[in-house]
Length: 142
Image (cartoon, rainbow, N blue to C red):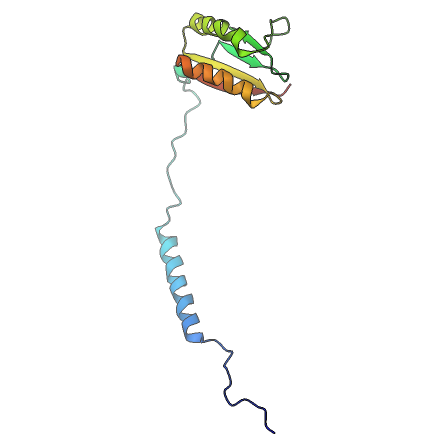
């Protein structure tokens, strides 16, 4: 008994189509490398130039501590050890409004500890949005 099959399937692939594909890819990459421009000019600022006036530091600041308490300052944020802390946003709304109006700028700096909750930061940002102020976000490590 002869159990060999007369219809054998060829397992080998056609090499002609593979060489066509490699040739097309080679042409594509040659054209793309010629079209790429590696020499884009960049204008860097000169060291003698003064920064623009809108980069002046913001004076009105709300500091959010790690325990989600608020401190409102209108000057240096380094000397806040004896400052009054507030528990919720309702207590500081009027103070923040007075601090921003006192500086004459429509910006409020929000300095947040890295462990402060997002909700506390977003409440101050919402206060900025309601009053039309620009928030300036910062964070403190300690």
